[in-house]
Image (tube, rainbow, N blue to C red; front, side, top):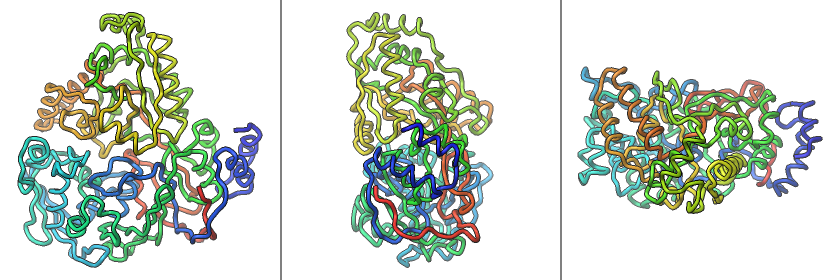
Amino acid sequence: MPRSWWARIRKNPGRPGSGWSVFALGLLLLATGLSGCHSEPRADFAIFNGNEPETIDPQTLTGQPDGRIAASLFEGLTRFNPTNARAQPGLAHSWTLSPDGRTYTFHLRTNLTWSTGEPIRAEDFVWSWQRAIDPKTGADYAGQLFYVKNGEAINTNGVTDVKQLGIRALDPFTVQVEVTQPTPFFLELIASRIFTVVPRWHVEKYGENWIRHGPVPCSGAFQLVDWRVNDRVRVRKNPRYWDAANVDLETVDFRSGDNANAALNIYLTGGVDCIIDKTAMPVDLLDELLKRPDVQKFPYLATYFLRFNTTKAPYSDPRVRQAICLVVDKARITARTTRAGEIPTDTLTPPGTGGYQPPAGLTRNVARARELLAAAGYPEGKGFPVIEYTYNVGTKLHEQVAIELKETLAAELGLRLELHPMEWGPYLREMNALNFDMIRGSWVGDYEYPNTFLDLFTSNNGNNRTGWKNPEYDRLLGEAAATVDTAARFELLRRAETLLIHDEVPILCLHHYVGVFAFDRTKWTGIFPNLIDEHPVNAIHRLTGAKPVAGGEARR
């Protein structure tokens, strides 16, 4: 980007839509190929949401952009408080917990209806959870239901009767849930997408593509209006939502795109009101953007890591994986590439998650890395096959990280790394199919407890995506779940994480994320920094006196 352009921004760091951004538009049009506009009436609020969603079925989605949309359409027994992401009443107005900590009884609101008018009752939750745990559904997040009685047995161990899942309807307004062990984070867990209630009759009628057949019965604050692929998903306020009186926005657009320069252009020219994801910020401009009053960064529970395909030689050898981990200069990557104050890390779990402190991982040691690689049969990298490194496009950050890896592995170990950039959809499919050598990965915590990270790499978790299976790791996680004493539980989790990040290393942890979002605080409220990066759109309000933007929106 020309220096003169940023010289003007630095002198005039105004709000979105101010005069200097018109000049910026011209340069960004050249850089991104954007041109023209259309006259479609603008939504009350528009978010640049990131990659085009694969699906917005809350029980089969995997991506964060998909989840943001689904969260506006579907709700569960609890929902996330927008200020701190703690659980608060959702479709259930209250609940009780048995003295042994194993049985929750949820009391539904009596005025619940789908957006299409049909009543929502306790049996709808029972069927929805049974659908989610059924292996035929293919939910990557099914592991979250392993905390429910018989969940793991149904999903992975051959129990074919989904009715054995520990959830039942005591009456039309009462849901009872049995958990395998006392679970201190359970109320936050069930606020996540897979636990939302979905319309049985509509799903059974249309099958796996039910979300594409309108009108879609929705249980959340909004209902689906339109989905234009590679452009936007529009939702409209659900007047039948139990808390509709406190929903300010009538329409919301979730704009999609995989070009950070385009995202910034659309934001600066008023095409969207908010950028919700740091990856939609141009990395090379981030230093200057963070000086603007409408841009805010915040810490949250998320880790950037790389997966090894442990089913494929030579990555099936822990010595090879350790050698690669030991040479990567993580401090250099965060200083030169990510540039938002990210914390280099050797651990998967961010320190302090729910009071937990992770163990020590592998720190940089080039000499030891060379010894391990030689012991594995590849002295100075001789005979080692070309490493195919896969990552998703859409932000320069992933490409720049890949380039840093390529240079380091060549210089320190004599290894050749070949870059394989992919669009979001194919990238997810290749990762799920284990069709890679090394692949970019990341995880945002679903709740503030270390299990939201450590459960990923149990043998039966659909989000594992490394092929790594370690019975001792599984045993330690299981024993920790059955341990009531917090200190003893955390010690078991530390022993498990040591296997993951020090001994076996099916993943290479790089850094803990810093969140970045942008919106005009003189016009909007309801978007808050929190530890799991949850920003429900039903909480967003226009400030008194702020005028809506008129006209059309810039076309991507």
